[in-house]
Image (cartoon, rainbow, N blue to C red; front, side):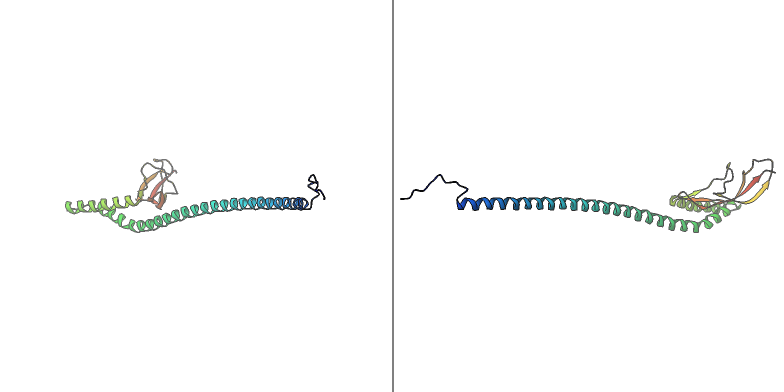
Length: 185
């Protein structure tokens, strides 16, 4: 009988040679898959970062747009209010001129004063601000010189008289004050 050598070389057997070859083939395949998976992961992380940056930029742009629209809406409202108040200034001027006229009927005069005061207070609540001309030097940005008088009694560019009151509306010039100005000789 023939005896089987049990101490045979494991690598020399046909089964063990096939497994070794398979292991050698599987290892490079797993390494390639791992490299590909790492590359995919890195690409996905890069894409995620780009999308996150894009999202943050879009949110910032939207917030800036929202603020700009809100500011423009406020400016349009103020501009419309400014035009409305400017249209009412002649009525206010007429009231002021009417109050300067002497009246024999005291109740009528008092009623005119009350109406004027109520009207003036309403315009002030809307943002009307009178421009002061008392003890102020002439400023061409807020005053309109209607008359210039040569005199030595007053310093140069002193406002002597106000012909028509000027107004600002919410910090913006609505109408310059018409004034008489002293000029040195």
